[in-house]
Length: 200
Image 1: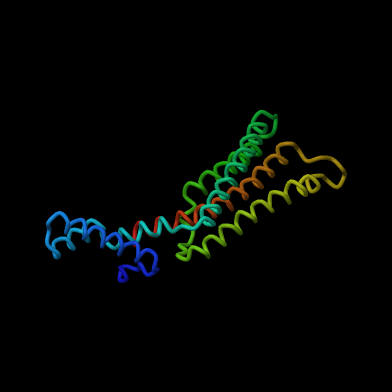
Image 2: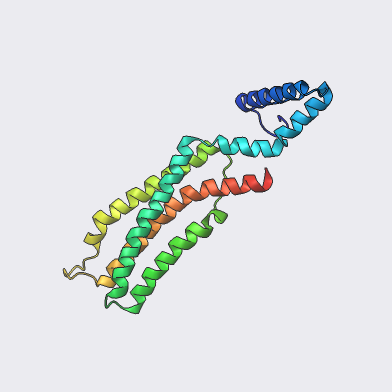
């Protein structure tokens, strides 16, 4: 177990307790000591498989909260983006702005579907959680700033508002960035899990 990288005392103690219990169970059934031990070891499983199980079970609550916050960023950004895209598609805006809005939605979907493949594998869970939390916080702050400041910047110096299509396309890309930042929080965990499944 130590060679496989299971070094923390709690998992090793748990494994030892399970091993001893299983050996005693085998001895009570009439099997001699050596075969009882071998059966108990086989029932516990291979070291690498156990390491993966302990890694899964040991994911901290903070990491789970960051992952949920990332998903929440996607749901919120995605919901508002769908509403904006719907309004944009039914408005008499030019084709360019509709395509810009649609490309923002496509970028959101693709970043969530495939983005984790391009993220670095960070093995340290505390660092992953901190970076993921910072991404979620940055996404929330970003969209708050956009909601507050973008309408002020979307006015021409002469005082005339920018076309509706341009305004909505800009907002779609703003929501897209929030979704992508949330996706990074989720994707870092997914990238680490994918690495563990393949190489650990």
